[in-house]
Length: 222
Length: 274
Image (tube, rainbow over all chains, first blue to last red):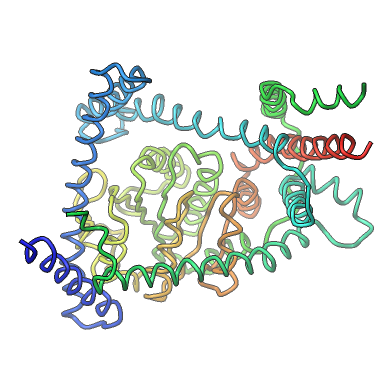
């Protein structure tokens, strides 16, 4: 049992991991063919994962509705939304536009999906502005530096702000675009580069731990 | 007395702020201020100049990976870039790894291809959505047709005039990824760096600072950031569009944010020290 549940999966991960890693650096036909085969397998697995996700989503929301759990009414919209896109998609054979104009799928996309998605994202702007008023407190030197950088960037990103800058601070000789460029190219890049290096090292270490069987959480508890 | 009033103002119902923002955005949308965008960032200019230098007939691959949520920022820059490519008579291929972007791509090409009298299959090709980006990016390095056998209308792509001589990345002059996700990072790491393919990008304003390191090392040939970037590109190709009108509406909204932050901090200081 241990062989099937532990040792064989670990061996598969080790062999696949090492071969894929080596293929990245070896531009030989065998390694290219191997990667191509793996890509095809991966696409098939992803398709099944999609299906699994969909079934799991449906069961989860169906259970919520049948138990009339808190917020069960919202779960109905999962099914309405799904059918509102899938039925037109089926009727339109997946095409959104023909020479005659919008198909039913194109209509659903434009007047349901686009509107809902745009609205959801637009609501964020209201919360960001409200949060900026209620939470952006300059209580330390670090907060002050952050405020100055944010102030310049917000101001300099619109023409009206550029005009205000040139009226108020034009005498300094530094254009707001030059100051923004400096902020983006020096402190912002320095910070981002540090974060990127940290994340990359973390990802490499985790990958090696998985390949060599040190990290086994993906196999579950059994 | 004043302190109490200020404290009340400090804890104002956020719905008032929502209303203020709605009015601030509504006014310039209805009656544009019309202020010209005077500055053009070097990163945007680099994309323009790179595209400008490509000889006519070069193949440019667009990876348009954004859905309606980021449409206001990204669709104008995609439109401007495709217009620029068509005006330079470049061949255009389009891929996407975001399911929600397919309708926007259809809309874009239905409009822009008519403006330049470009034909599907001859001057441009739109590949279907693929869910597994890393597998597709790797596959395209050896054989594009191994993963994309048909276009989004199920027409076989093999033999299409637009794809003549194009088999893998080495036959592409530029990849442009426009996205509000981390897909641009994948293009840089898995394609640009590994196969020496020039990659340029277009991203939302909020994610723009994160790509600074790639620009400095020339891993990105250029970057268009947010609505301002879109407006800049539109002014470079001398075709004002939604980016230019959008940046106009943002004028007052940006100033409102600054005014609110300043006001809350001045109130805080007054309450604390007076």
